[in-house]
Length: 237
Image (tube, one colour):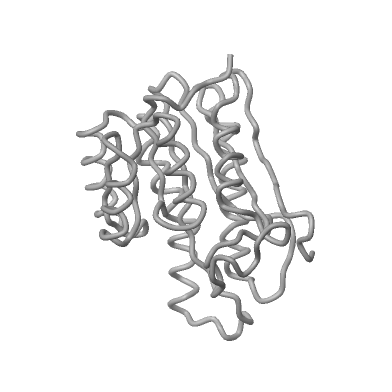
């Protein structure tokens, strides 16, 4: 039987822009209880107002682990244990490796890779106790192919992919699904672009990627889509 998102508690990071925003809107429309993390409280409050009663928000940098502890406590107090975690937050720079500043290198790894491990670890008791606990890590097709001038971001996404593959095997016995979604170019403001710069068929519409994420999360409980890679047909490889 296909699972439903209705009344399931889903935590999404990076929830106010791009793919995170599209997932929040779609999952709310499907009746999920949403806990949303992003850095901008005004954007979060506006999103909460538009999505309805089963939405809670908390402004935090995912690499600030003290703040994340407070966010988790707040969400669980309002919505109960987290059943599905979507690690979507990430940052990166498009520039030659020698031009990357040390602070950019550190922050990219902390937000895009380390925070994924930390947040997943903090929520493991909830996920293992859930009837169908799930982790969906939004990575990148750069975790599977090289691209010049994206060395640090690519390395961080490789770390996310390796973590997902290992944890998938570790938690299968506990009934927890850990899945990896690797999108190609998305039509968002990432990497200095603006939304609309790479529309379909040259870039993926965030709403379409959200539909794929929902599909992965609603497969029958005995199935697991370990890894899905999706890119626009006209992506320039």
